[in-house]
Image (cartoon, rainbow, N blue to C red):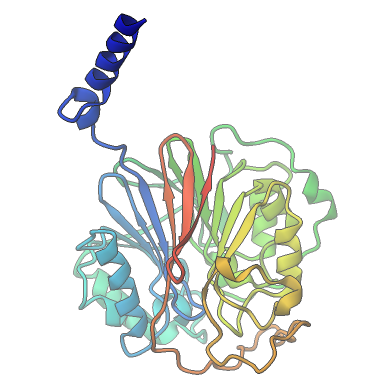
Length: 367
């Protein structure tokens, strides 16, 4: 009996002792995704297992505030340059921070859907700066089906310039049962032009579709679901009801949604209802508590990265009314203090975790 125990101990030490081949084997490198707080705009930093970086949008014009927050996320990820930058579309909350960001960190490759289609839109005044920047670097106007070359990842463009992929991704293409009850929405000019990407890392899959609207979601997902299912959806158009139809959310069956909303922007009841009723959804993570959600549709505070900029005496139960379509939400009080991101870390086997940097709450999701 003692001989057997001694032999077992020796074998255990041989396998686990420091200095052995097993102990020295490096941990598998992960995919890192930082959803940065840019006050209701969008800035999503993706860092591949090889250390290459993809930044989707640059937040608002804000005297360097949003740019500094993006650079802080890049520093946390160990990134010293942006290898690829996607401008999803020409709106100020996606493009406005770029002139302030570019002097702070090198950007090697600029990607867009082509020229701005809305000369009266909020991002038109930044188009000149955009062209000036990409004239000094590499620039690509992408089409659906194009791949963005990033080591360790398969990044596929699925929407751009009002077009969608026509051939389903591998494993996708099944009939979409939610198409039968689809109700068209309203479009502005630039949102439907959004560059949308599907990212695969081993068994992990996620999508970021910019501000793609309901009608374009229908074109992409009906009558057959060309994307298949995903583990996480990023952005969801700030949680606005002009996007986020059942044909997209319910058919893609995400377990996690990370919403780039603001205190007074996004998180609208119609969107929250679609998200919370989506088959298989486990959690919605938000940049901010949304007054448009109220307590009725919001999520537990542990899933919210940033607290209200002006905390009311009593937290509202009923949602605020969203501004009419085509108008902007009231400007939020200036939030120049500490801001927190939500970080998703995925492994090649399909497991992943999400962390709220405000409270360090982390939830792990098994494959």
